[in-house]
Amino acid sequence: MYKNKQSKTIPCSFFNCIEKNFDKAARFIPIEKGLLEQIKACNSVYRMHFPVKIGKEIKVIEAYRVQHSHHKLPCKGGIRYSIKVNQDEIMTLAALMTYKCAIVDVPFGGAKGGIKIDPQTISKDNIEKITRRYTSELIRKNFIGPGIDVPAPDYGTGEREMSWIFDTFSSICPGDVNALACVTGKPISQGGVRGRKEATGLGVFYGIRELCRMKEDMLSVGLDVGLVGKKIIIQGLGNVGYHAATFFHEAGAIIVALAEREGAIYNKNGLDVSQVIFHLKNTRSILNFPGAKNIDNTEKALELECDILIPAALENVIHKNNVNQIKAKIIGEAANGPITPEADEILEKKGVIIIPDIYLNAGGVTVSYFEWLKNLSHVRYGRIEKRFSENMNAELLQVIENTCRKKISIEEKKIILKGAREIDLVRSGLEDTMISGFHKIRDLKKSSKIKNMRTAAFVLAINKIIESYEKSGIFP
Ligand code: NAD
Image 1 (cartoon, rainbow, N blue to C red):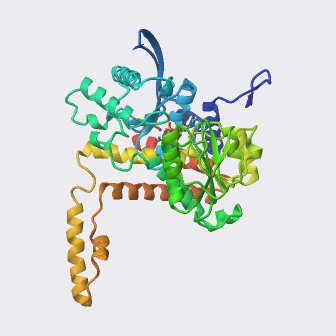
Image 2: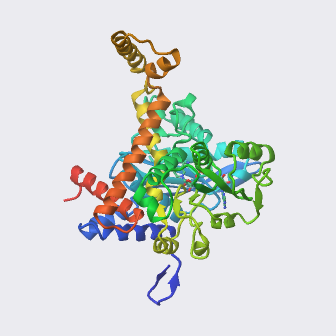
Image 3: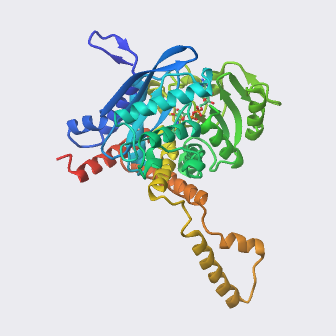
């Protein structure tokens, strides 16, 4: 909320909310105001309307692509399909992408796209028609390309849509040897990288796990170190929420509640995530899961007793009307912008640790970067060095066995000799990125006496962007 000239209280737009967070961080950065304004501004906004024949009718489709920052190229950011898509939302999500890429050291400017449709009410054939037409509009205005702007999946989209985008791009722009790099999040058979699908959820897991390893931070919220036994609630069982839930469950955390559109389910002893997914596939709903209690008003699930709350669906779900009922000690922002600025301030006063979206859900763009590099280098990760590493390990082991006069078992040998596969390299790159990103933010927060992780993350991002503007000579 803010006051206008007539002192009337006006609700903050989503973009204004992010600007507020930016301004809080900017106070810690001694640089000319105009330069900060340039970093904050959206560089290009493309709003389009195009006709698509659906059945016997012609429907006019509203869509967007926003490039928030050109300080590094290409621009990068997902495409969402939702009936709630609007310019303000896409501008905000594009801005978040800029800061996110800077935090995890991924050399892209931020972008985002959106089509205002409800994919659940449209047939697959018509979604394909809309996706292909949207892509050709992007090509027409030079808003897509391996070195220009590279989309990826987001809310309501996945591998299927990304492969339609690639196919449309490569047929309209034949002969581009780098065409595969025009979009990421593709299926493996079409140039995707192993580990992209689960990357955002796995990144969320790595980020929260790292916080839970910090004794000092855990003491501040009255929790033990480690993930085992921590009670977790996850909102949204889509790409991000489902994978995050699976990794937390496997690590020994207790998933006490899962929330979807139609309602939520709760079991204080824990829900078996794979069984819930099986039930969801069979009944098309998470409700009535054996042994769990149904919660009809899905929003109420956020207010249940837990240690960690992970909103992984949409923005603004924690707001001034429900914030005082939130009991979590840690909130991991897997979704983009799930907490309004007013709620954020209240949670901070209560001592809740919030791991901000601009860091926590950066796993997707990190692995998208790996996919983009794979597409440009035209070679699968591990292809060149895997066999070489295995042979080297075998020779080394032989020397050790001869010296020690002891043979190890075949099972032990298998573990020691193994060369890295694509999935191993992608996951280790992601883990390293998330862990080092976490410590950069935490160290900055401590050394600059910044009150929360969000402001520290913004300071880190802004400094990185200034650095790259300075290197390019654009800023005097
Ligand atoms: P998705 O479409 O795969 O899943 C979203 C899920 O949320 C769906 O299962 C949907 O039914 C559910 N949902 C919708 N409204 C809900 C409600 N009111 N209550 C509970 N559940 C509800 O989308 P996703 O890709 O998992 O994205 C989720 C969030 O994560 C978005 O904010 C997105 O911007 C962010 N994000 C996604 C990625 C990615 O790689 N996919 C990367 C970074 C950030």
